[in-house]
Length: 78
Image (tube, one colour):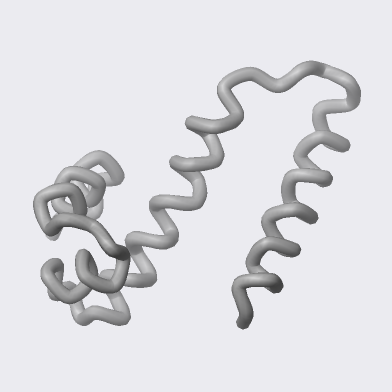
């Protein structure tokens, strides 16, 4: 899956989100989107990195402590 394909999936999902609102104005979309994208991102990367936080942090371009903080926020620490 290319970066372009992921962008298209996000765009399509957002269009559906706005359709579902039926004219109601959204609130706090940025934080909502970060949370709903960040958790599955962390889950998949940690799985592919075989729970190795140093490797996952490197793949994500994050400091290992930042990764641990995000894992804790999403209750993904094991």
